[in-house]
Image (cartoon, rainbow over all chains, first blue to last red; front, side):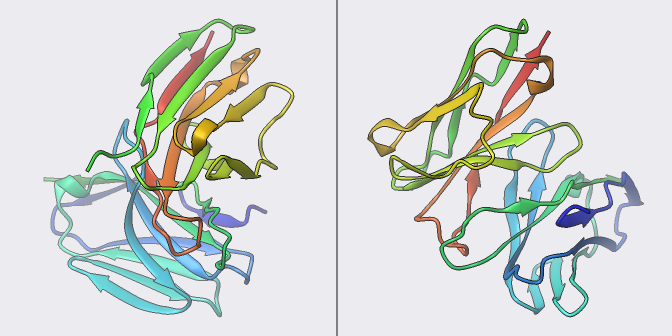
Length: 112
Length: 115
């Protein structure tokens, strides 16, 4: 079993839909949880970052962490064609350990 | 502010040939990472530098891969000899000193094809 599991999709939704992306993980020592967005032929860029459990909202994006279930989610409201990309969850152990453990990524397509 | 710069963007070589990738991190970022991203997968860490010191190279296949970061700025990742299975995207990232909550900024990657 990989440390971080993520459904690779692909996921196709109409414009304006609410999108839910999820990851599960096995190591309870993870402390920091991130979502990266990666457009085709580009490097990943940080979208959201959460420390420990809880919710964080930034515009149309909401990140949720449930450490008791080892489950994290990213919600996108009012999805736009420009949101079409691969979304990667990532996490690390905290402290001076900066190494990120990534999921496989979910490829999202938002149709106009 | 310029982002992480990588070159070349694309490289096609025949198996058993050597290849090298170059990375220039964001100015002031002491921590530099090299990641490998296979098709349909997330990035996997190869090596992490704090300044010029490789602090984590446990995932670097040292029989054929090598890396250096002279003067703690630019870095080069080399493969010699390349194998078919090395075809992938090689990503460089940088951050302020490698604390867990420091954002990593990624370059566009070098897409390697080994024939």
